Image 1 (cartoon, helix red, strand yellow):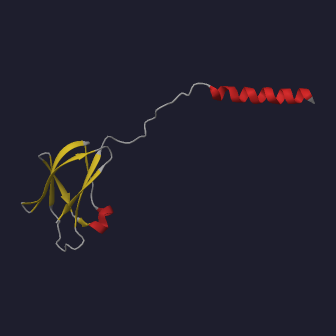
Image 2 (tube, rainbow, N blue to C red; image 1 turned 90 degrees about the horizontal axis):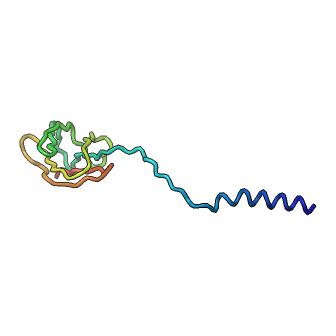
Image 3 (tube, one colour; image 1 turned 120 degrees about the vertical axis):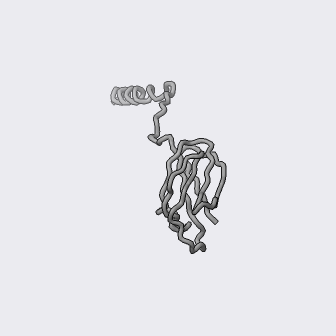
Length: 115
């Protein structure tokens, strides 16, 4: 009976001793891409239809498409850019509606609101 307790204590000691050693940490990549996002939306009360919108990012123009209201934000097309400092300009029918300089972080989404 006494030898059974000794065997059980030895097994417990063998199981617990490795967990008392120095802690080793690993870093793993989370799998996120090195990108940021820009979307253009309009106010909910705005009834104007914006179909041919140009989004100018750091001097290069990309055609954005249709602009949705704030409550339909999830439908809005997303433009992918590199994280960092960018100059964003929204041009509709030759008129500049928004012009701002922003700093975008990793996986950050900048929402440009047209008023």
